[in-house]
Image (cartoon, rainbow, N blue to C red; front, side, top):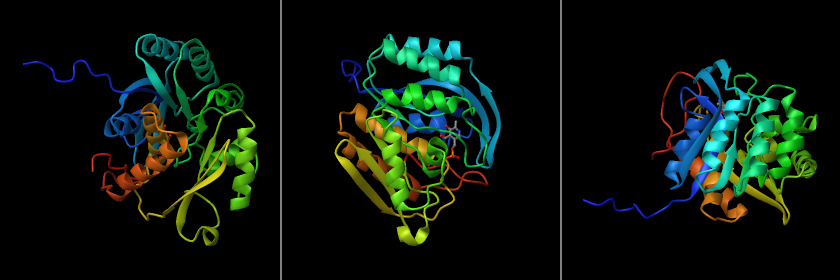
Length: 272
Ligand code: PLP
């Protein structure tokens, strides 16, 4: 018997992120997303977390020189057309990543600026915030902060949709080609009319993506999944705005079909 697809190469993407032992977020969510969307996923692990649906109990960072070695292994061999970064943990790890991205071709880059888990645990050291903005954002096709991350990045509160638009302009100033501010959190609900909106700003201006808000506890890993779904569609050659629209559709479906795992914020269902 022959292997039917031996001559076929699927689009390949690289995930640079932390491991989540309960597999709702992090590398595990990213790889499930890529598989579901028909993209071959490779992974560089930056940290291992002891984590469940109730929160993060421990973090074991991988040493930056070994993150670099993983990056070299992948980028020197596999033709990567899109990269997604999640939990990067330290300034030194970000520096290694930036050096590797400057050395190899990698296609498009989606940076999910993961700062703090829903339970409040820091997933990036405080001194790494500047490195993230100054050195990694300029390489990015897209950055995907949620509202709390936007506040941390610009150093002030964001309370209205007007504030979100202003913040998007300010964030583009760090050098990414586009910014997607995910509106699942914190905006005065009267203004949003029980819908969940994401606002994209790119060189063509603003684009608003709206969806009815899903009332579910199963939101663990929605941020990771959104960014990796965008990465998957970019790897497949979609234009940015279409990649974002399709990714939102995918995440909505994964939430709508989510089931009960653990006693806290459950994971999404990538296999519906
Ligand atoms: N753990 C890891 C390794 C992550 O990368 C992330 C988010 O990006 C989280 C946890 C946080 O997930 P959530 O805030 O959706 O619970």
